[in-house]
Length: 159
Image (tube, rainbow, N blue to C red; front, side, top):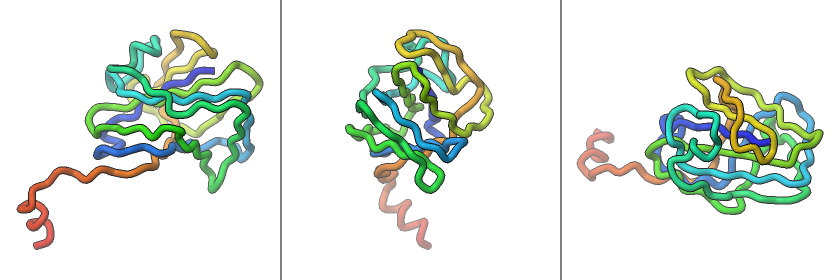
């Protein structure tokens, strides 16, 4: 399977180095994959078209790639620690793409309805897919960069 989701910059906030991301499955069961790969990169827009690569505004970065991997919920979330942290500059939107060879295993995550296509799905290795007006419940974890401020504006916030 191949999934792509666009996370809006307004949902992320400031720039951050993403060390892991998590999704909230609809069941409490774990899943095992023979192979699992995650990519991240800047999005070309607020919504996704049917062409996976055309949805990126630049190059994508492979941030996780493992064989024989098992994911089990912890505290209701399944967390995927990245092999390579990804820096999101805090401007524009972010694409998170996951893929694994077709088989019996699936990820069923909770989602919310969006305005415009924010989720793209297809079979493994497909270059195009079907877009949906959904966004899965995701949690990005990492280190936030400081927002650029002058000393005067910082001082004014404490008066």
